[in-house]
Image 1 (cartoon, rainbow, N blue to C red):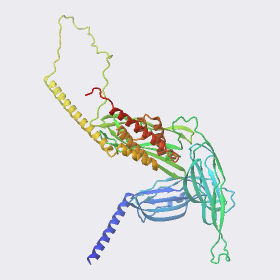
Image 2 (image 1 turned 30 degrees about the vertical axis):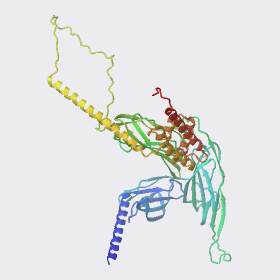
Image 3 (image 1 turned 30 degrees about the horizontal axis):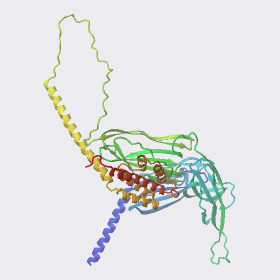
Image 4 (image 1 turned 135 degrees about the vertical axis):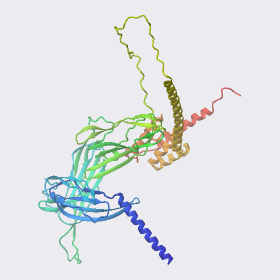
Length: 580
C-alpha cells in the first residue's frame, strides 16, 4: 500500500514538473508570432507558401480575410508541434497557407495577430511573364538557368534547376553537382505550382550557389534527372494485383558556360571581397570600463553573396594601456533561395591597465559591390572609451601650458590724472581664512594622491595576479613541445595552434602572446613566419590543409629551441673574470 502511494505521488510530481517545464519553456517564446514565405518573387501563374508560427499551443486562428484582397487561398494546413533542443523544450503552432496572386505588381502579405502577438508584413513581387518555358509540350521536362553569364573570381553565381511535371511522379532523383574549380553550396529544394499553356504543373526547384576559384571559362556540366512517372494505364497480365505501372525517364539539363574575370583594376583594397552587401557591426558587454576588469567587444562582419570562409580576419591595432585577449572567431553561413550570407564574429576581451581616455582606431574593410560594380568600404568609426580607477575617477587629459609668446595684459594709461610726486604702493595681503582653506585643500590633495598611488599599486598587483592566473594552466616548454608534435602528427590544426601559443608563452616567458600573429612578430625567423602564415590561412580562411606539410613548422620550432639551449649553455660556461 505504501509503495502504491509512493509511486502515485512520484507520478503526480513528475507530471506536475513536466507541466511546469512546458509552461516555462512556452513562456520563453510566448506572445511571439512569425511569418515567412518560401519565395518573395513569383510570376502571375505561380504559387507561394506562407508559414505562420505561434510559439505556444492555441485554439485561436489567424484572420485570413485580408489575404483575399490580393491572393487566392488554395489550401490551409495547421499543425501543433513540440520539440527539445539542447535541453530546452518549446511548443508552437504552425499554419501553412498556399497562395496564388490575383494581379501583377508589388503585393503585401498583411500583418496577423494572435492572442496579442503580431507578425511583420511581407512584400511580394509578382511578375507578368512566367519563368517557365512556354513552348514545353512534354508532361515532364527540366529547365536550367544561371543568373549571370559574366562574373568575377569568388563571386556568387546562382544556378537554378526546375523540374516541371503535369502528371503524378513516384520519385525524382538528380545527380549531384560537382565542379573541380569552384565551391558549390546547395541552397535546398522548393516546390510550388505554375500554369503553362492553360495546364497546371508542379515545379520542383533546386538552387545552387557557385563560387568560381579561378579566372577563365566556368563550365557547368549537364546534369541527369532520373524521374519515375506513374502511368495511368494498368497491365493486368504483368501486374495481376492491379498496381499501376511506372515509366522511368532520364532527363538531362543543358550545359551552362560562365565567363569568370579576374579582380578589376579599380579595386585597390587588400583582400578581394565581391559581394552584394557587406556590413560591420559591434557590440559591447558594457559601456563602463574599470581598471583591471575585463570587458567584451564583439565585432561582426557579414556579407551577402560570400561564405564565412571567404571573409578575412579583421585588423585590430594595439592600444597603449589596453590589453587584448582575442577569442576563437565564429563563422556562420545562412542560406536562402537568394544565396549565401556569411558572417564572421570576432570577440575580444579587453582589460584596461590604467584609467583615462583611450581611442580605439577605426576598422575598415574594402569590398567590391557586384551590383553597382564599384569599390566600397565598410567602416566601424574610431571609438573613445573612458576607464575609471578603483575610486571611480578618470585621469584627466593634461592641460596645455600657457604659451610664452602670450602677451601680458597692458594697463591703459590715463592722461587725466593730476601730476604728483607721491609714490603710492598698494600691497594686497590674502586674508587668514583663505590661507587656511588653501592649506587644507593642499593636504587633502596630498592625501588623495597617496591613496590613489596605493590603489594603483594594488590594482597593478591584481592585474599581475590576473595575468598569472590566466596563464597558470599553461604547460611547461617541454610538455608544450610534445603536445605540438602530437597535434602536427594528427593534423589537428586547432590543437596545433593552441600548442604553438602555449609553447611560445613558455619559450619567451611572455603570457601576452595570445595569437599566431603576435608569435610571428616576436620571432626573427622568416621561415617560421611563413609556416605560421600558412597555418593561419588554413584556420581562418578555410584553405585546404591536406597538402600542407607541417614538418617544416616542427623543424623551425626545433631550431628555435636549439638556439635558446645553445645560448644558455654558453652563458653557463663563461670563465669567471676573477679566479678565487
